[in-house]
Image 1 (cartoon, rainbow, N blue to C red):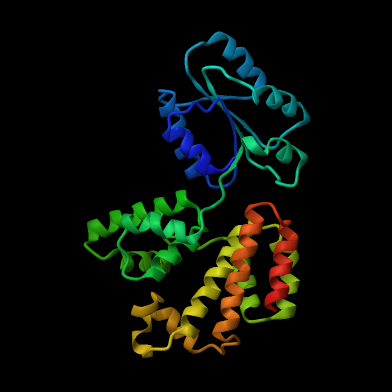
Image 2 (spheres, rainbow, N blue to C red):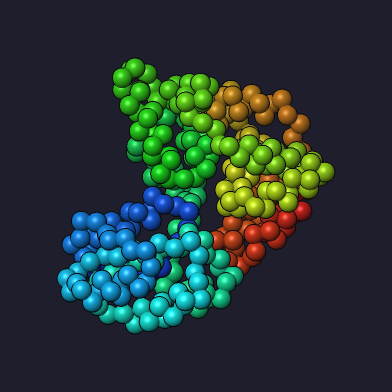
Length: 308
């Protein structure tokens, strides 16, 4: 099931008897849990340990309720319960949340029509969501915040609240507060510094450095790696393709002064047409991963080889 379809049902006040949630984007998932609770006139959901608890509780309660069953991964026994729940028409809403669920698994293929995956939102969607919440001076600050939080909407909202509060107290612009927070490590940079090194190796076309890190990077959150790679190549594209007076490049492109100064010292290995191809290629790979059309390890290797 697509998220758009679920949202349409909620807007039309259609009941959601049974659905399976999974994915790493917790904040958006919780927003939809709240929406389903409102649909059923329930203040908060009831959490159960397993399916047998629901079957017992469901016999005891006839009024509307929203039940959430949290599990790490599907078991063989789960298939029996979920097969029965597919035709459930009761007064309750049953949400099964799996922490890990592979799109290549037989379970996913069997129950795909009931599954909604909450992936981290891409940069463009997050930009639209957070721009009304904080007033940065340049586009690059928004992008940097998104990437520092690794596209995690919940983390982004926490950092925005922190920056806005301090900005109000100190009477200083949010952009200055944000960059001061980074400098003083009040906003922690991602622990996955090896991902940033890996992405720079790819951009620098360091063949040996990239391939030596590839086995460890495959185990990381792939969408985050590809999104960071896309963002870096996008910045490079904006810099290379800019034809105007370099003095106005920050205002015209949204790139920060520091980034422009950094890029001006680098030997650029790409022309704008090659960068445009790379951006289109990475975007296509990200969509293929999200739709389960390509395995994670193959996707990253395929992307790197096409760039190097």
